[in-house]
Length: 246
Ligand SMILES: Cc1ncc(C[n+]2csc(CCOP(=O)(O)OP(=O)(O)O)c2C)c(N)n1
Ligand code: SF4
Image (tube, rainbow, N blue to C red):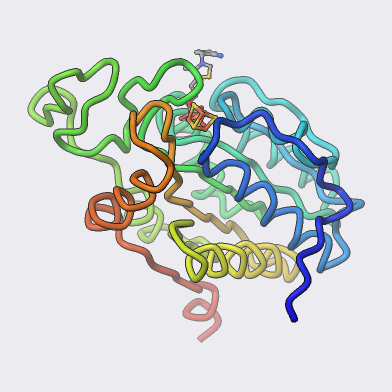
């Protein structure tokens, strides 16, 4: 029989909307850290957005970065504390709009940190504005007719960009079903292991539902990711350090 036990660091409550992906992802991070014995010394740099509530969901030492700056803050933390697992936790607006430069330069320097990007295709906390990852034609509060790529550019596939760089690990996962949740957890574990082995920059993009701003119920939100979002942002995993070792 499988016994589901709450990680010690997790609190009983969270502040996310019903059906939001952040709570699941927070829990997976907490589980991995507990299983690897890192829960007492992992450090997080938190982006600005709904994910800023992560410290209210489970208790590890965190720095609340300014909007977009979490990867840069994580680099500083890691350089001071090279033996601690250090990760940033950011939304797509935070990491890929206002913080695009910080995210890319952490990758370009192949910093030995992990960036966990929660891609829900909009600026969730502030009312669902269009973000770099909003799909073509997707309606948001700032693209009520749907994203027009002739005006706003095309959706940003950050995984493809990162693949051109010398980084250690890249994965895109989706928490749409049990198998997807398990894969997401394994990716977090792989990224933290790579960091422990000093492989360099690791990055996980999690396709995650935002039922409130998508104006879909939680089940329909998961279906939307599977049927629509994944066709633009295919799931993948690249252990690039293995190619670099050859
Ligand atoms: C410099 C600055 N600009 C704008 C804001 C307002 N702001 C707070 S949260 C947020 C949206 C965050 O969206 P995202 O990073 O995608 O995370 P989500 O809430 O969707 O998880 C914005 C624009 C801010 N706090 N600081
Ligand atoms: S607004 Fe969206 S991202 Fe924010 S807590 Fe609600 S469902 Fe989650």
